[in-house]
Length: 263
Ligand code: ADP
Image (tube, rainbow, N blue to C red):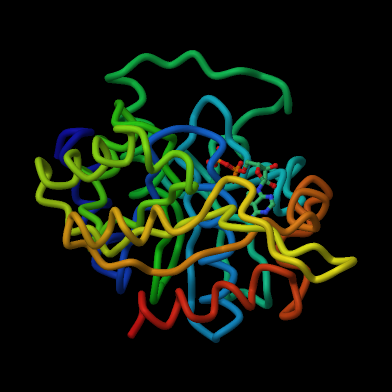
């Protein structure tokens, strides 16, 4: 069998042992897409589901840092990549960062090579049986989300936005991308939606709020929920403690969202 044929066969075998696959998309960077991907995966794993988290951001992978896995290196051979294992084996994580020897190496792969890497990541990672695979994709509608959509054939896309980004065309572009690829949109999450002052309890809509819901209604797409600005999120994620425990600050906001996704 050709190399390509063997790769394809391996990919199909791997996909067959994964229950549901969701890709997390956003129109642009910095809206909290990786934070959402990590917390969705952690929430599923905390709920007892066997979960995989795949970081396909080849240029700026942030998942390893959020999980304190910057120095993890994958073992195994070319076709059997060992993921990092967290939460008593319920959460398996794979990132391009795990293949790089030097933490600060930057990745300069071009389009066709990127497609091959993403396809190998999905197919060659030793995930075992998974209930869910959450795929964090780079922002926008470029090579990586396209490769993910074509290779992993996700069951659906979860789109993350911030209230002020809703006013732009970026989210609509992501939705259009899904429509063109026949990728069902599971729904929209509005992140950084309002800030509750820890001192006086007063809520302030720093970036305004409610735009995500309005847009979802307008486009007839499910609205999955809002996540407020939580100062601890930045501190904990910079310290690699995104999923330190069930009481992590975001888990509460994610419980309702997860109910809608898995329900
Ligand atoms: P993206 O993947 O869209 O580029 P990230 O998930 O890396 O965005 O988040 C960008 C920054 O915003 C990070 O420093 C992250 O900790 C912070 N952040 C994300 N969501 C929240 C939130 N709800 N409250 C406070 N900070 C947040």
